[in-house]
Image 1 (cartoon, one colour):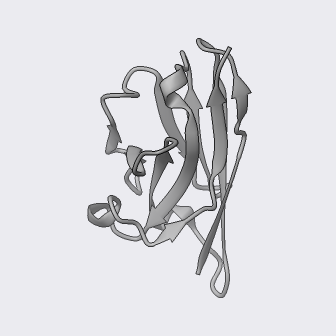
Image 2 (spheres, rainbow, N blue to C red):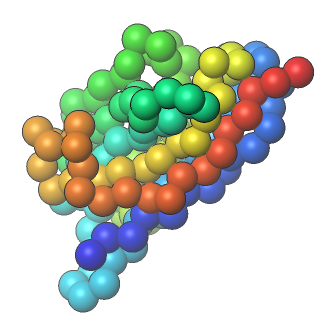
Image 3 (cartoon, rainbow, N blue to C red):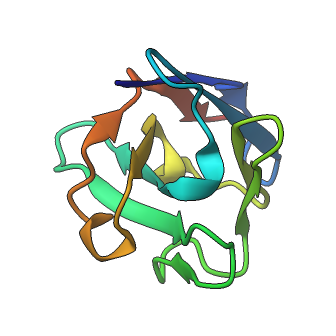
Length: 125
């Protein structure tokens, strides 16, 4: 089992920045994040959850949704089992609950096996 815990959400003004963190841990065998593709999803109020960024095990393949491209950056520290989402130039439409996710297969990252519980981001003046 893999446990994912997000942090770093909060209230920020439009144009501001936030950095979300996701700490991964596992039971049984020691978890090594290098074996997992990782992703960030978000769910805005009244809308379906959407994938906004994902990253392959090696970090060589990265995807961003058009809505966040050029503003958000996904990164990972496999040694520390951490995933990050740097969010710049935030807009009110970025408001929502942000989820960290992971899967052993990059091809399955659109429907990942492991999910965090989410962290709330609110962009408002």
